[in-house]
Length: 65
Image (cartoon, rainbow, N blue to C red):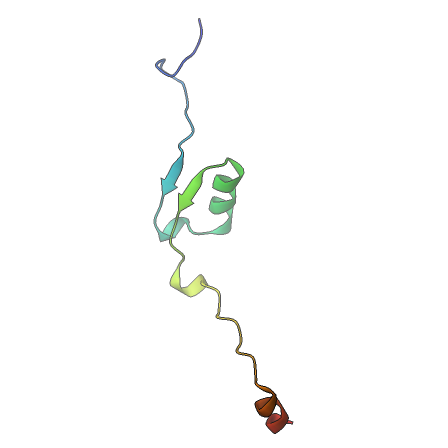
């Protein structure tokens, strides 16, 4: 008795997953990445990375000294 795609009990891995913000934590994303499943999960507003700091021009850096 062989199992195939048309047999009951056969588990197939999805190609991609779309989820809501509740699943945007690291372990959920790592699990999907580990299994090779592409995912579309929006970031929570309070956990988004801060923008990189702006670089000062030479004139501004000299003025701050």
